[in-house]
Length: 362
Image (cartoon, rainbow, N blue to C red; front, side, top):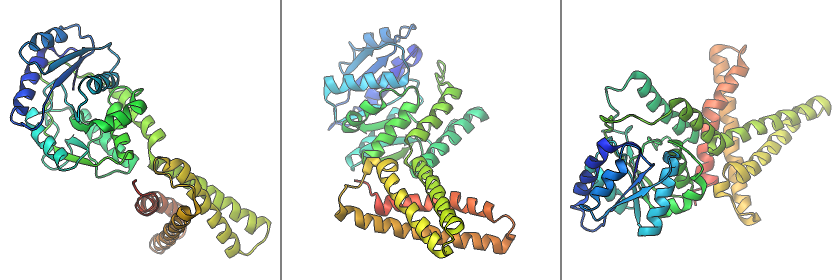
């Protein structure tokens, strides 16, 4: 799948390169679908001429509505017309080396469901001649997404060189069809992970285009990234639930200890457990809704006990962390130490363990 807009200077180079790179892979049949967004520079005309030379080259012309829309229409067309097992994404501007296609195929044959061409693992790279602002945008943007989803092992969320099994596309398109631009790539990968897809990565050396102009709108892209993470990240939802639990805990403690004059230990015990119950329910119904626990006592009770155990560990970490900070730096800023320990230690610790022991991948 090659989406294009004004790629007349590149398209007649990338097509022969892809067919040459795949010619030796005899147990797969490869087709190229160019999805052209009504380019005024005759990109579609060039592709149409090339179809006489390459019978497995196809052209789909669509309205200019952005990268996400082009991919959605291309995916739907390819699935209806060819019933493919695998769908590749590759840019038309020669940024992606077609000679790496056999490596993608090898990962698929070894069990991967989605293979990412990553610029940010060993032997991968971005162009050295990129301006510093573009390097910062690319590297920091991916770090933000990795932290936002707390998926640090997946290194390249925005790249467009991928091999994807068609079942992922069929499952994902109804959800991601309304996303535009490069956020489409983030949404597709996010849905694949939440669907239980096995993700693999191979290094790529990304090359800057020599012909034509980049279509990326940096400011809009950054805003869209933050918006997508905020509304779709289980980690962000989990953190929000944690803050709700904090206010429940504090409020009930205040009620029991200050208003009802109960023993401190009793008020603390009751408030803490109430917050834990609230957190468990909200996480199950909202944060981890894509792998929600079945609503039966037999299944819920063991998970709730595990949740309590992990939560007890969080309390212990917070207690020890604050005490150590107070011992080293004094008591005056205890509230600052508390915030630092919760944000940088307790929340990531809890999120990782809840995913591992309570809300496991299905």
